[in-house]
Length: 100
Image 1: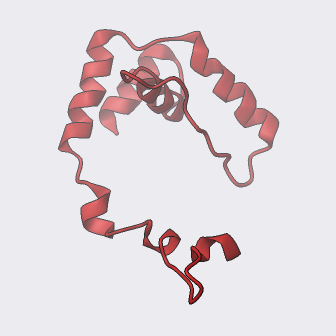
Image 2: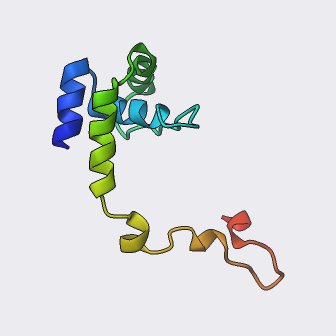
Image 3: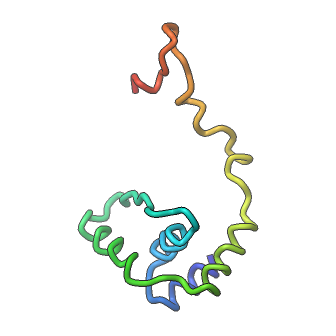
């Protein structure tokens, strides 16, 4: 979080914006999907998200964030299979997620 906070301060952006910008600057990524925050009016998050296109991370900041992510533990190892519920089949052979 220290690296993200320092980068956010440098660009005068929020940590979520820096995170989205980092994802967007990954090779082969052309968009990011952003959820909304509970209790925050949509117009506030829309304005903030629009700022995503007002800056780009320089190589040094991009690599600093990249370095931190390489140290992170893989969620799939600590949480297990988080998509299994979408692969269940009912007694008729249909995917059960169609009924949620």
